[in-house]
Length: 71
Image (cartoon, rainbow, N blue to C red; front, side):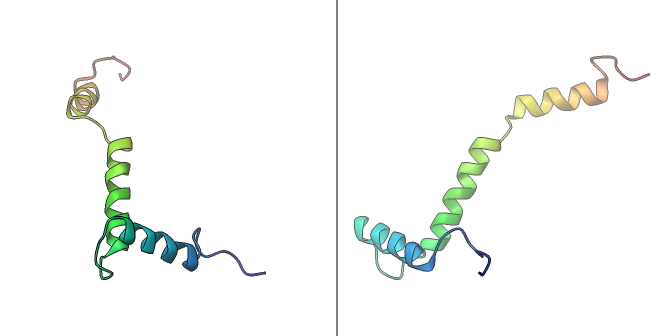
């Protein structure tokens, strides 16, 4: 038994790619892999991203010792 090297079989990937390209009427040369990576990076950034005010608050807490936990 061989270990699974990816979570998606090649046949599934190509079926998904062809269905996406057909549905959106794109040329067969469309870079589907780049599209998937880009959309996953955007989703990750939206889910894990931290807002600027929260960054400022965190930096102030660390450097100005707001909570007084350090000697």
